[in-house]
Length: 64
Image 1 (cartoon, rainbow, N blue to C red):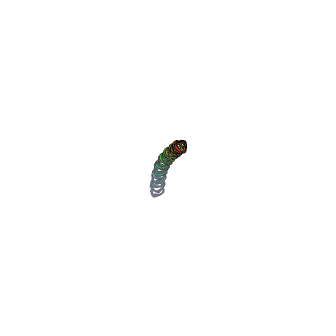
Image 2: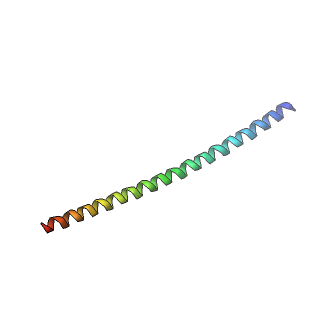
Image 3: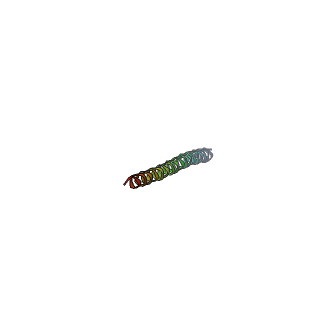
């Protein structure tokens, strides 16, 4: 009887570990997506700022 109880406990522990691992993986994937979106937004902002700077340089050059 003790062996069966031990096996049942092990199965429960394994299921709990799998659940925790799955939850951890899901959180990591969510963070990766968030980081990717943040990086994309920063690159877009950088591009827009560069374009704005080029436009300003062009306007200043035309005033000379």
